[in-house]
Length: 275
Image (tube, rainbow, N blue to C red; front, top):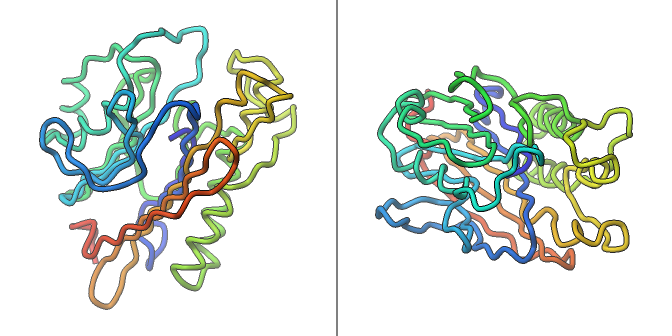
């Protein structure tokens, strides 16, 4: 992912909500969110990077979940470094807690953020190889883009605000899903005064500032091959018969055309959020 907002125990009806966009080069092939097995035999629900084999957002039936964003730091980028997408399946396959998992990692990749959840406990952590170690996450609404957790970039602030508003005002699951997908599709460019300085120059800071990135070729021929590839919304709902999680994913092609929406229903998931 390159942008995510997530709500942990912030609403009595919807105890877990995640809204996220993945930005990537359009010529890097990917498979849509589906159940598949990695080389260890682990079954996970995730999209799949068909170049390196990893993923950016995934979960297991046992209640482990992870999402990944890159850290934007062009001055420290190392071409040929190991794919960061391997980190999500590694967490999903692990039986360690966040501290043990991080201790076992070989951190030779470029900059990243990981949100790590073990919902059998439940326990949430944020970890970055640009930070000292895993930090526990409290309940509430959090935002993450290509900087540290809750860094107030305009798109991160906007998405977290829209998530809070959608939780407060949505009378049902369908309304909440529609509002979050609309929030992820926002193409508004941030004012120059609010832009971060990440070392890519003002023109590219502007181009990368919307939640949904689509860059005309005449504006930046190099970046026109890059943009938002998919939007994912995960919502856990308390129902009379128990917890039920729905995952929606909308992918878009290089021409800006939406592909058919992928939908997954997960009855009684996650396994141990308090009822």
